[in-house]
Image 1 (spheres, rainbow, N blue to C red):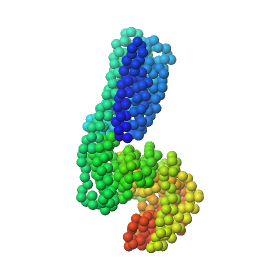
Image 2 (image 1 turned 90 degrees about the vertical axis):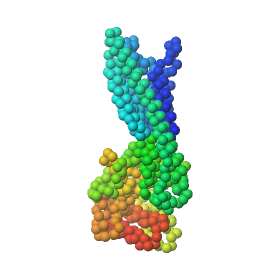
Image 3 (image 1 turned 180 degrees about the vertical axis):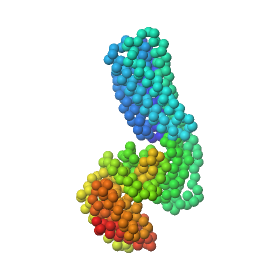
Length: 498
């Protein structure tokens, strides 16, 4: 995809150049504007994933390319001194097309500004903004003058020629900027790829302990590979050794980002990447790049990234969760690529049936499985769920709003996205105070989300039973089993109270 971005920027430049230049022999235009607009539209296929503005540009460029008289009308718009031969209808069409062209270029400037900011080259972003402002000013004057062209006399020829030249220069500066940003991206990628990276000895030992020596060697190779491909530099390991290796970094294409390295071609990798793609435009972080073969994702960095766990007010934590929950669920484009919540429950129940050494936990899991089946008969919408919506996956953004990260990507009823948050409010010791707190949380969520108190309690029991049994599956030592059993029993008592 990175190669497509670089090619896309150059296609923009060449397409803009074709639109800008008229080359005629015997009145025949050898470089019609339609070709230029089609070339610009083709460049959008490599750029529309990078910035949402490019998606709109693609359709605007195709619209302009499909206009049969686009070259003539745009030429008239840029050389208003010749437009006195036009009818009123022709001038209206010319101005309308010129407006579409200006809007398209303005959106391109916005996308270029985003890319320029990510290159890390001092001053490039300011150059983009400066040229954008100059372009908008010149085109606004041209659009203001155009309605008066039918009644203008020869005395205004020189001012109109100056305005026409200013418009040409503004367009030329835009074209040159496309190539300049493309070169800056290329330089950033090369510079990032040349900067060596290595883990400290302590980090290496922790990675090998958590993932194995083979995974460590693969991670080193992937970092070298994608440091070049995506222009990554300033890599720093986040010391969280769970399912994936996570590093913060700076990309020449995207600015500050997060590099996540998992086990190659895992189902969890597919589910997370596609879930982020489907949730793009919402309050989820963005998946910028992905390589399924090697199990690598490049993600948007959420700054300052303070987890919701750091919010001291329980009332505020609940408020944030409810605001995110209400707007987050949507129907998946493809149900078949995601696991199902009921499938999760059935799978861990099947695993626990093989564990003869912890019958009490298996009994909880069997009951939880039955409850899940019963709940699914009433709450049976097939929506795309986060699957792991707890405090550490809800981060504060620079705009003061919280963003969601690390979706599991699972299909089920939205009800099943609630209990993971409640479970994260559990404390180390089960006390009457904790029971009072969890009951208050359940009652608050039931009221705010318009769901039955009983259903949330049952769902919490299912989630807690799964969580403790997943610990068993992950080889929790026997001395921890008593505490895990206590958590399941606590969730069961909360359910029975309802």
